[in-house]
Amino acid sequence: MDRPRITIFDTTLRDGEQSPGCSMNVQEKLRLARQLDRLGVDVIEAGFPIASDGDFEAVQSIAASVRRPIIAGLARACKGDVDRAWQALQRAAHPRIHVFLATSDIHLQYKLRITRQQCLEQAREAVSHAKSLCSDVEFSPEDATRTDVGFLCQVVEAVIAAGTTTVNIPDTVGYSMPEEYGNLIGTLKEKVAGIDKVTISTHCHNDLGLAVANSLAGVQQGARQVECTINGIGERAGNASLEEIVMAMKVRRDRYAYETALTSEHLFASSQMLAEITQVPVQPNKAITGRNAFAHEAGIHQDGMLKNPLTYEIMTPQSVGVPDSRLVLGKHSGRHALALRCEQLGHQFERRELDDVYRRFVVLADRIKKVQDSDLIELICQVKTGTTVEATKAVSPNNGVSSAKKLPAAAVPFQRAVSAAAGAGNPHPAQISAQISASTGQATVSIGFAGHHSGPHSDRRLDHHADHHGEQEDYLWGV
Ligand SMILES: [Zn+2]
Image 1 (cartoon, rainbow, N blue to C red):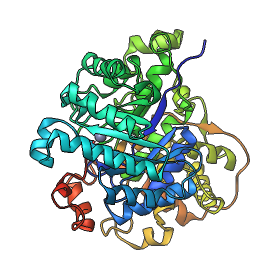
Image 2 (cartoon, protein in one colour):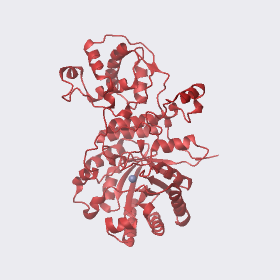
Image 3 (cartoon, rainbow, N blue to C red):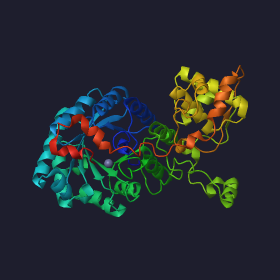
Image 4 (cartoon, rainbow, N blue to C red):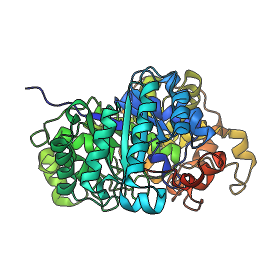
């Protein structure tokens, strides 16, 4: 029997990037976009082109170099935004313009100061314009879950008539309960003319911890696209977590008879890469990707696990890409095993960089026998930040040069060791050894909430185009 296919729309680079401390530069976004491609997401929302030149550039470069998935760019419902989004997306193999406009009375009255009729017209016009540029158009009625249902149906019907191909229903403020959200999707399916010709999408925020539950409820009522982010990052309490959505459908196929195109074995590496780039740690008990997600400490659990893993394990660590605990990296491990292990931890290397990691690894392995993931991550960190042996030796620990970019606690994965074998050998300069010995240890857990102190995200962005949108400017970050 064919199972309905769910489109996974990843918005880590747009909504996710709105989290405090999660901003990324163009290169970092590109790196993550390539990982999302590898993971198999169907749509990458690469940014909000009008928001800043950096966002524009990120969308443009992702569109040019990540060719398999659909690349979406966000736009408010006005010509300037739509044109700018299209400009950024033009080189995409599969572009999508994502238009949004608030529809709830509270947003219309206090934020946009327009009537329902004006809202309807603005939505229709913006979608028609987007459609004249790009065949793939998504529309989001922002704050849909607090919008009068009759009016919501009217807006959705209007944008479908204007050419929308995906209708996204955001629970912008994370207010819905699962049954309520599911019913809303069901109502739209029942009442809106033409709805069967478009894809219905969920977009749920996690203010009450229900983003994943709400998204799944939406799917059960007919939504076929889920918007989500790696590690569930996003505005305030975040978005629905991509890894939880995907694994819920995989582990509970009996209840959620749907398919996604994702390779779940890449989930852990994707999570690690995001934590490393943003330096925002994953909470240890985070489902699927937290470092304790597969740890068993209680004696009775350990006893059960040893007798049969199924006693306490509903999915294997390997199924989400947590590296195999039976392998141990040691001094006989070869370059290939090391590269594989780095990849599992979310790091791909060019040959020259890998050489550097390998050289340091061999020296360390000679000294400490078993190289734990935390040790390896520290090595990777040194290579990425260009910390040199000389620099480290030459400066005191507090002057900033020697403290390599620290990784978040979450990037120190499971206290499991890994292995593989091959020949190594070779000279190990004493000074490298000394430097490594100084840098191992607990440095990797010292990052707290990077960027927490920084000001509101929107302030920085608004500076760039302050003259563009007058009153609506304050409400740049919707959906
Ligand atoms: Zn959102």
